[in-house]
Amino acid sequence: MSYHFGTEGQQHPLLQACSVIFTIRAGKLDGNKIKAEDVFRLVASMLDLLFSDSRIQTWTQQDIDDLWCEQTQMLLDWPDTTVNDRQLIVDTEFRIVRKLLCHHWDTYYSEWLYGLFSTTIDNESKDSSEDEQQRIQKRLLDFSDSLNNWINNDYNGHLSIEIEAVAKGQTAEVKPLKPHSGRKAKDLKSIIETFDYLPRIDDRGQRLQAFYQGLRGRFIDINTQQKDFIDLFQNTTTTHKIVWIQEIIKLKYLILRIEKYITCPKGLTIWQIVCAHFQIRSKRKETDDNMTNDSYVIEDLHTRQFTKAGKIPEAVEDLDRIIRILDPKINYDEVLQDYLDAQLEHDEIKDTEDALANGLNTDTGV
Image (tube, rainbow, N blue to C red):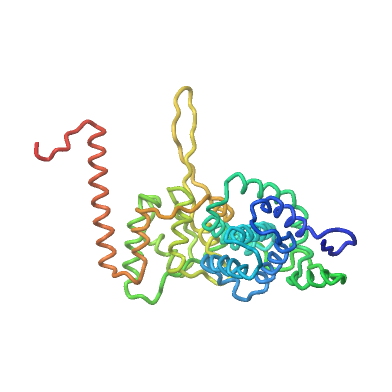
């Protein structure tokens, strides 16, 4: 069965993409009744949900993770599907939807939701080989132009209804949207708004100060002033930028872990705020004659960098202790002491390692 939309005889670009990607996955399915059209319907329903739900601007990573679980549970009603089938179908669905979000001209959808979907896919698709993922990504690239045109000019938010109409032999009438008729991309350089960290807790100031001290010199530039950093979490306005001196994946890890403790100004996403107020120190190698020296450059961040930062680690021990400082469920004095004890132990080990490296005697009894 083929579905046709718009121009007579021209197959819908989304169905074409679903068919091609389904072909890559079909050989790994245990059931034999699943068709490309089934994936098409799932993708259509999810798109309609994302583009019509009034809650969309408050969705979090947990919401998208839950959406994965809901889709998996829904497939329990499909006949002859195994656990493996359901995993592969939902993974395929999410990857196609993410591709469409990548092309939507509205910054909110193309950046924010794309990042949430990427994180869920990375966390849930542990059994998918790197080679297979690259094959899917490469094949989806073949549809970039057609999907870009469709999602921005033809999609009207009710694709699932149109699918049913065509399935019954009727002609689907797709009312094109006016190109770029909505919120324009936000200039990151113009953003001066900041996060708001739990304004109602009594020890808010103490926790933010300790949070700053824990990051300073190890994750943010040592020259960062306390007030400049804390301003980013007090719902104020500032143009100051904090220089992150570690890998970008660790900054992403930090933000995702503290997301539940902070809120964003209306109309802005968490990654827009991060990019507006953080820069990253990158190492660059410069060759001078026969000598190779490491040098650093301070660069602005862009939201797309966080979607391509790689797989998020399950834990970052030294960063986790600092993040716990912001957890209001843990007594402040207790969490601070735990951090200080760990830091003291870390410094003692570091001192010993430095001493051994320089041939010094570390036996205090001598």
